[in-house]
Length: 322
Image (cartoon, rainbow, N blue to C red; front, side, top):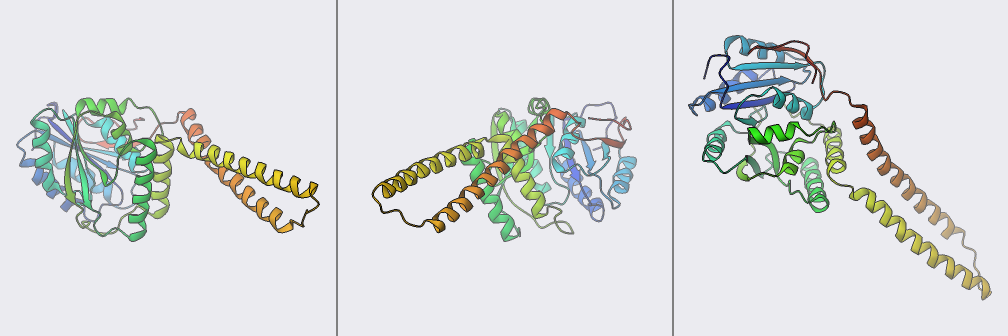
């Protein structure tokens, strides 16, 4: 729905993009058709997260043909979480919808989410997966392990949660006040609280291509999520160290008793095994502690979450830094 550029929209739709140029035109047509059916003024906020293909060209083309579209191009690939942040900062709607640009978040669900928010009494409408589609087995098992761990030790149940959410303006403003650089959108969103309602959906097939989420990227996101919302790994290190201390005291008393009783035996194998076990524990412990220190180091540097290279559409300003 086109509208005068100065009219505040009722709904902002934030879509982070990375190498989506090949199918982006068709995706935007499908999304806009669903938005037009709402009969409410809306805006599209398209964030190109440093794509190397023609994604930005399509964004420019879209913004030039519509007065309800803003394109934001980041200076490099900062990651989906930073791209979401850039979109949320630019969004002006009374409600803000976040969704992916590959149609795995079905546009047909937008009307139901909008209706639930418009009815009042709900601050966040979040879509949750009833199945994970054709996700690889390794990713499926990794997700269950990660969310199970996070739910158990942080108190936030994010099982089958997604970034597909419709948020009231006050929720967006609260999210933007969170100042950390180690971003985990859905975890930070859950931490905010507010009144929520869930809408189930089945993950659709991608519009084209394959997911850009490699196993390494997923592992990094999992580490960020765990370290940002739980200090349990540090406590596990302390607890394990205590167990080893008790075991060492028991072994020491046994060795002393055997020595005094004249039954001392050659314990070369035992010593080697203990050194290997304790050495491994120490290295793992240092790794866990180092991960938290690295996160602290990134926070205290205070670098911007992202850098905007250029913008198009709707009074865009170039070379802005967030």
